Amino acid sequence: MAGRVLADDPAFEAATYRKVAMRLVPLLFLGYFVAILDRVNVGFAKLQMASDLELGDAVYGFGAGIFFIGYFFFELPSNLILARVGARRWIARIMITWGAISAGFMFLGHLRWGPLAGAFGLSDAEFSFYLLRFILGLAEAGFFPGVILYLTFWFPAARRAHVVALFLVAIPLASALGAPVSGAILQFFDGTSGMRGWQWLFLLEGIPSVLVGLIVLARLPDRPADARWLSGQERALVEGRLAEDEARKADHGQRHALREVFTDWRIWALALADFLRAIINNALNFWMPTLVQEIGIDKGDYFRVGLVTAIPWSLAAIAMVLCARHSDRTGERRWHATGALLVSMVGLLMLAFAQGAPLVTVTALTMIAAGAMAWLAVFWTLPTAFLSGAAAAGGIAWINALSQLGGYVGPDMLGRIRESNNGNGADAFLLMALAALVAAWLTWLLAGARKKQTV
Image (cartoon, rainbow, N blue to C red; front, side, top):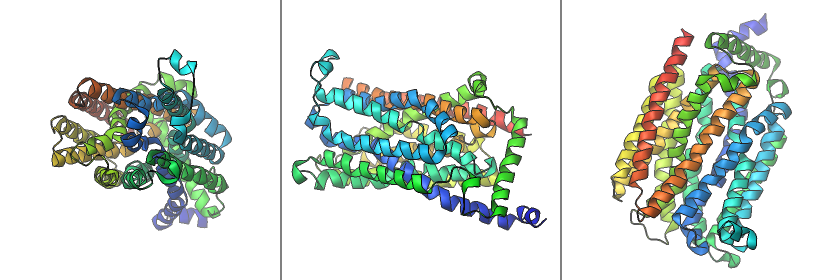
């Protein structure tokens, strides 16, 4: 009876979920922070590495994007393995391997492939760049959808957008905080012990991933039943709310079995929307240091490039949390998500016509980043509202896997358009604005369908 009273006590429930969030989210956030840092630090390395290894814009764009091809191939299997062996061991495995591979990029200029690289018409450096980026994608695959799935083991749908946002804020913060750090490493470590700044960048930013992976292995519980820091009443509350959440999913056209993932139109529409968002986000991730440098910053002042690059991502982090928190408080998803993407679309149109004007360019980059990040936090409440069991593991991974192909398209498209237009990427930004508009329309339809099903 006492347990029942406590479960119906809003103060007890709020305190329980605050405790769960404080135990889990900082560690997951830290993991994603170093993941994003390792994934996108190549954007800063390019400022120095491209000339050292003779990598043109098209080569860089393809290499940045091929990461997501490896990610795509292994993401669904990775999430299914996580559901079988547990989040603790699998997330730790992912982090340790990707950290080691990321550090290995410091040897890009020293790997020799002989006739193998020549058979593809590539230099040793180009072949090494493509191969390591592809393998890095294989290693990291499953981390993000694995965490999204993991959060469904702890938080009901009504509380999930805010928690997901606190986790996803690692994306803009890794770029915001990592940008000046990466710039400083490039500038001030260059020549130390006979190594270039970009080599130090990969080494120093790869090691933390391995260390965090070891912490995850030691500290992350797989499910509420494994959390020794929860009391019996707290554990009963968390598990009870999740059971209620599962029961409500029956009204949403619930999917349990993995095979149902591939026959539900909502999964494919959600994947398309996130694919279009990923085109924009990843072009921004990998090219922003270059775009910022081109507003007139001295070629060797990498630290200043990092400081300016931090501005859009810092404001995006704030926008992301505020949007998700307000969406959870009001229960409204449709306008929050759709409006966020329309902000990105306006920013892309501004960027297409900015012509290197500093204030317009930084404002446009901020709008693009803030809109895409705010949308992402709200977006992940949509599939988890009607998926459970094996369908949740497979569906989340399949949506994210298909969307990651947008991570290949965005950087590669911008690189090819820039190279064919003497460094001008306006046509690419116009295409991305169209992508944002279509994704906003899909979001409007999907969130509307979800709303009708909940009535």
